[in-house]
Image 1: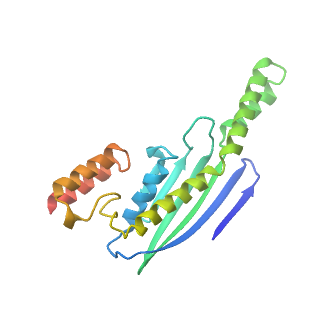
Image 2: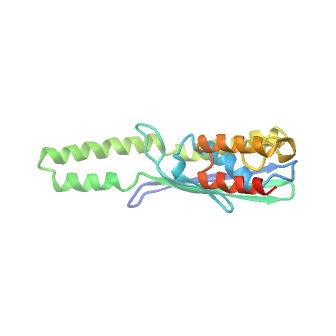
Image 3: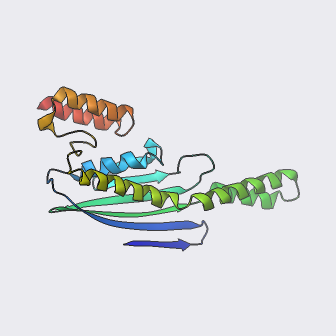
Length: 204
């Protein structure tokens, strides 16, 4: 089910909700693995520091990447495992942010001066950026769900203790650490997450 609503208030917002369910053949798959896969996909649109793993999934808070792009996003994906099914619920919203409205106020205050029209020009540009970008947050989560679906269609073999790392039974701890380091270097996992997984492996 896919629902979208638009609200005009102090800041124009685009709200979005996504719901997906997937069949899981490998019962060893965890919420964390699915969340890491989604986060890896979301990094195509958001900076690493704007994404965060949560106990129930992954969240995003911040602007999208790219020139001439503006869509301040606050969204969360909640993942629930029920038997052989993974249920993913995404709720989010994006807005133009507060800066354009400050520029609009400055234009009104300085309307009789050239500086005022500079602020008005900046406001217009950012409004146009938002209009062209407001659907991108929703699309980024749709792409993240597709990434999860792709891994599941591979027979869950690409899910491991973290996204992209195979099951421990097929790799040595050293190989796992190397793969974890690669994920850390690519900013798919944080330094803290790497250190935590490294500590777990060294205990084995």
